[in-house]
Length: 510
Ligand code: CA
Image (cartoon, rainbow, N blue to C red; front, side, top):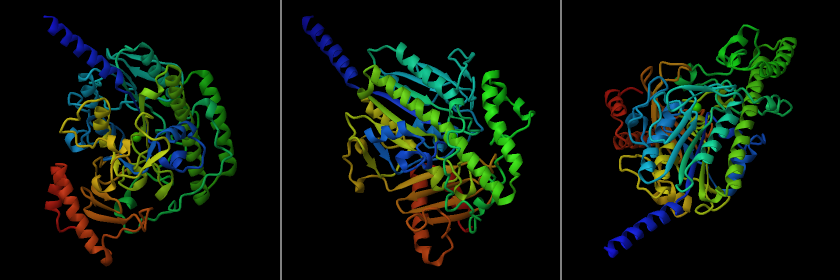
């Protein structure tokens, strides 16, 4: 009997030791946060000092990508570690099947407390999280509603990004301190319509805003790009997007949720811009540049609160003695166009939206100030989180654990050389044709389908801005054939039957 008791005690002790040794995990997921605006990726706006600090103390991934660059599908991929065609959440128009496996459930099985706070956007109630409190859909920037676990809603006064951090630290205060935790902090910022916190209004109004080299793109050789509806010139609206509006627009829900004091300060600022706009009355090129600058300034100002709240959360961890035993991941649901190709929004497999920021801090494993250039994807977050927690990523998760990269023990020749991408949301807002493709270290091959079947091929080394579609260039036919063969193999490997059918059925269309 004594032997059994001591064995039992030993087991309890070892489980306790195992639990104590495991890191806490925080995954911060912002929305539409473009690397072109983040200092850690070379931006000069000075909008992200706290995110940049994470990079100085951790590892920045210079080649982090999405599998499907749009809000809810990206979260579904992060959560499940599976491509959209496997997790079933292909576009923003459907409801996620939350009953399937995810990293939250995996972590619950191995003794973690789990929470998802803030933007969730998957419509079905979260599963795999002991606690959750999420924005309905996109949520509001001012005085937003949150859905509670009982299905009821609270309206919380204040600015959304601050509130989400408050809810996160409140949950951390109340958690069981004897167990490790995994918390997702989902931010609404910097999603359209880029409504800054009151204290940040006008923060970038005196700053020079450079114009991207392909701002005046005319889309030669790129049919889908020529037919999109996401340009700053035609799609971006003065009222809805840039807040140059008359009183009737101020009655829409974005502004109705504000209290009188918030509305007064907010419109004191935007009405002065409106007066300036009317005085100048810009037309054509001048109007386009005026819209672009206003877009950039609103976006950057909105990102200030996001960055400040990353800092607040990090300060909280430090104050509570949690900083060095917590692995912190900063990412976005995808990148965004900041005027490249004349656009805002995302969706395309082009670099600006396929890329995403990814910075990870965990000094016990990661050398401070390090950078990684391997091809990684949001598909990798779930298996990474499970393995950081001491679990084993289920075989059906399609991503790779980033642990060897974080430890700096991977050689370039053993890591993946190609990424797969598939975008589905068409016909829909912004009119981006469906497409799938592969990105290698040097090339990108894209197959557009549904509205129009054709290929795009880019040599990223010679043409990083993706302006020159080489698919019909005679000099690139052998590269094209090789990539087409690689794409077909990839489609089979990731079990994308729909894409395989398209390759088979439309083999002769180019
Ligand atoms: Ca998004």
